[in-house]
Picture 1 (cartoon, rainbow, N blue to C red):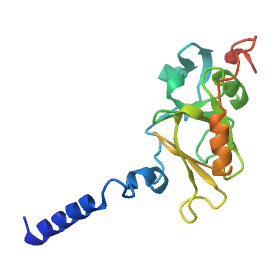
Picture 2 (tube, rainbow, N blue to C red; picture 1 turned 180 degrees about the vertical axis):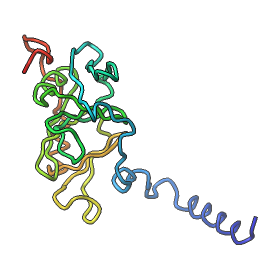
Picture 3 (cartoon, rainbow, N blue to C red; picture 1 turned 135 degrees about the vertical axis):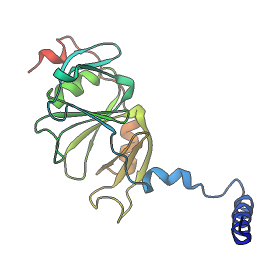
Length: 195
């Protein structure tokens, strides 16, 4: 190993030890400073699926030729109306784990039904659209950084699988998350029965 490289490694190690336990931890800010992750798997992009049932575990979606997909409630972290270019018009987007699923079920109906199982919080995106995030999946709430985030963003909501910029102030977002709980189940039919 080159002598200069050894010296640099020892110097870096020494500085790390010298800082101590109270030193700034860059890992705490990583979700805000890193670019957002994109889903790895897209389902229903060409032909959005149809929600056929809801069970205790999740949402079952018929993707026709691709078969059926069970989206477990525990994996859902965001629900929104499709508005990004390349997404099927009029569809609803369900982000779960590092997957994205497009369905033809209206977003309001899906949110009503899923909201009975998990706590969903309604936020506003920088372009004025509504997004619903699972309160239990949010790992950090931080201030949007000028030059890094959309100028209309005030807060960035971080999850294990991605981040969402919103226009609500940090303190309001934290208050909304703290008061979130699943909606009470009401009498009525399945989400697939609604038009």
